[in-house]
Picture (tube, rainbow, N blue to C red):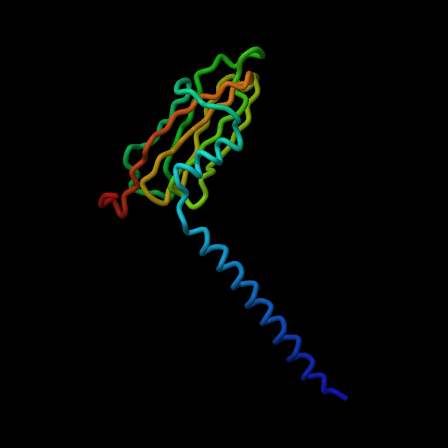
Length: 157
């Protein structure tokens, strides 16, 4: 007959081992995310959401030219549109081409919104370009981009 204490230790050891394997798996996933997105991966992410060739115009991005704190960069993205049943912004997609994941945010709109504009704070890991694509209800796409320089401790970047 096996002593009950040895069974308890066996279960504990098994749980500890399983937890260690789980932590190792999570660490490997996080380590793989350290690679920065590229302009191509940002373009691919946007293309998967909005099919077609975007044209310049209608979209504006307001963001500081230099961000002393990349953890919370204020960004306002607006689209010049009348927002009626006949013509309105259906979706707005925002990407950053230097973060580990290029996708920042996607928003959906209806004509009742009255205005297609969003304000958000974006975490930027380094100096990079923000790209916004507006998808109109008729399928037309419009794009704008803006580079934001992220400084390290306010010393340049």
